[in-house]
Image (tube, rainbow, N blue to C red; front, side, top):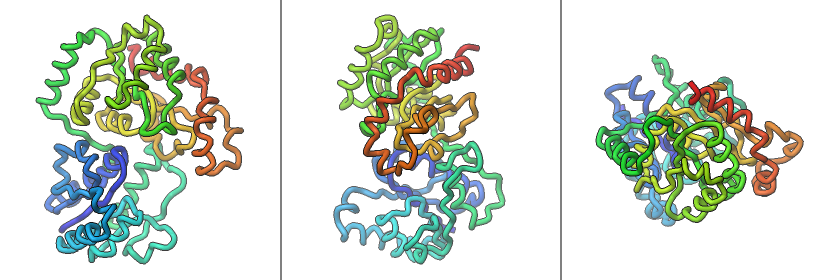
Length: 355
């Protein structure tokens, strides 16, 4: 059997959708399972034996109809038995149409159901604490009637060398071994997904006041000035606990560094999803325009907690569409004061550090 899973988009989406591949491997150990993703996301798939081949969707496929057609014909030549489209947007519709796969599975949405042999309801509300992001992906396996107990948790694989390199980096920066280490997901993928920097500094101060911990900042070199803004706004006593320059050179080194941390706190995004895949406790501060019910995965009130402005000021969300909330996101962020959720962070720290 040959199976293709499609998931363009960002790191978090690709990592979460990899659970489709993982469960297919359990059900069909001898199948060829391929995964089509953006090239920038492949580091989160390294070492995953559930995936036989990674097919890259590159910028040229987006810019050139000819290149997109050639990719579609490449997929067609593979003669896949099953195609699972977890992305289900225009780019993937073309590939699905050209694939000639015997069975094509995706979400049931108006205007495109003719493309697929199996159209799965796109649920609006989660049924469990897995969150909609996980539940929706697992629902794409239902038509195959897999005779297995599905595993909903994404996996990241870190090599011994990567772990040793991260340990050496911690030693180089003289990270205190007798203290637990917290990664701060400092910045979102865009401004509309980034908790205001002044507020984030307050959050970091609060964490440092509550616990004697090591604090790392997760940021890209291009985000250095924003990271400095947060650092400079922190109290001197907090700054002493921050290892500001302890950074990885790439995504794989970040994964290894995160593997040496004890928990993560901050903005929703790829860093949070990678931490969860490494089985690290997480505390998420959601952007006002992001739906918590989708990405608040594995919420148990102990190891995984999250907060959203709507939890505290539901009046600000009455009769607001996602488009309206996105437009007002920066204004709404300013209403999302750290003191709203200081007790929740304290609870999270007590349950995952103070033991």
